[in-house]
Length: 224
Image (cartoon, rainbow, N blue to C red; front, side, top):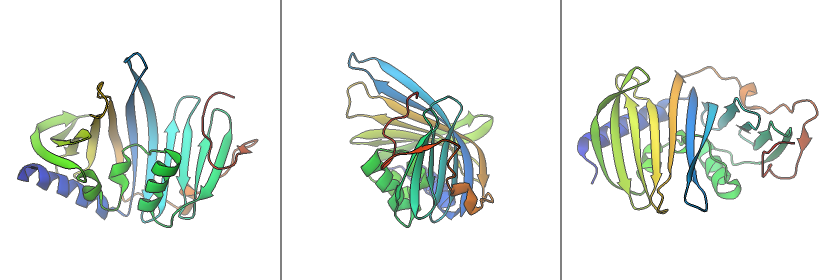
């Protein structure tokens, strides 16, 4: 059962996110991978994410040589690999929610904190939730935040929501319970720009000089 206070805070955050016609945010993600010997390896990526509802998304890894860029312009989605200068473009659904589903199911592509990008994030976040509670008020990157924790059959997750009139998510942690090692995925969000002015050109892919187009989408992004 979700405690009333936790549910109220979560609903407040998701309603606010859903109300934003556009936004830009910087995300720092830590993805734990488990080796065949059981060792946990953390993969860290920094990304700049831009959303313009109902059908625009750009997620671009920044720093590092093997950066990936994902662009969705309402008609197609493109994945560009900086390391070997390759890209692919495929048809996409006409709305963001369906395109996120397509990217996940058909191409195993995840935008950082993608559950928060849906038009109704509350429904997505609580789909398999069995219980939730308000842990307390904490500080995330100098901002007061409300710490919420939720449990489910396959995953547990926590979220820290900025306190005040802009209840933005500042930190999101998912623990996978279907593996005995219980790896975690963490994304910290900063530099929020609600109602950012994002022209359509933000979401249009322009191939860099010498870029090679591949069939479908690039399946790896290693060095040339």
